[in-house]
Length: 389
Image (cartoon, rainbow, N blue to C red; front, top):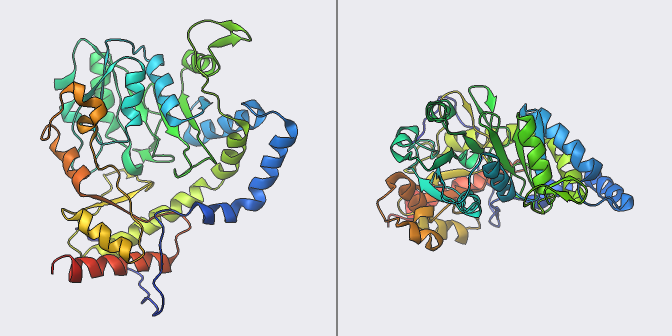
């Protein structure tokens, strides 16, 4: 249990119909931005410049400034960003990439797209991110990259990971798909390795109105290659220097993201406040709350607690109108798609514990105190009066 000295602000729930609380509320966010978003979309529609173009270019410049890098290359998804970053690191057929089994499967998809093999290490029991102490024992002559994931909005232990990469001459690529604005020792997620990869899937802290992503880097040559590769590997029109991809971001997404980026810090502050309030209100319950590691800024893409009777608790919460999520219930070494790698139950015990016990509680920037109180009341009732009868 997490204890905080500050006393929580608590308002008794009013009697009456139960409050239904979504896991996230994209409609509430849209309603708050409608007057800003609609003119931008109409401008794109009227311009007939629908793929890449000025809106995407402006977003690239603004996002690069936001995270503190020289280059942002906008693409059509976070998965595509990872794929390009691995190509840029020289990953190819027969190579190995060290990563974690506790993440969304797109992290490993990108490795497989390069015809390389994901090699897993377990995660840290506090942050659920890559455990640096396990990396070196997995390095072989085939290892071509290390791919940590900044899970749930918190950065991995990048100094330790980068030191191992430097020692062995192996580039580090950051999967920052859930960590827009997260920081590690004052440095932004995505800026510490050779390149960083972001997803702008609608439910992310910075989400598009469809699929979108970006890869960021300080390397001029890499950025040029990424820009070519996303557009059929064209150095100039109809001149294709290598096998490329159609990974371009469409202009509508660039316009939406440009508007939303201006609000991201405000939304992040709201998420941090809501997470702190959860810790205050839930600290006396028998449930394992997420922790923030020292000198890291957690942006709370997801608020994931652990409990051994997760499934029963989730069922009771859903019946009470509280929607929850599972991120992620099957670690990648146990996924059917990767059974050819020979993964077995027990290989990565921390990742397996998180997978078996994870319960994502509602948390979104527009969440009201009444909604959060409803979550707390329902969870308190389940843990104290239902689950143990």
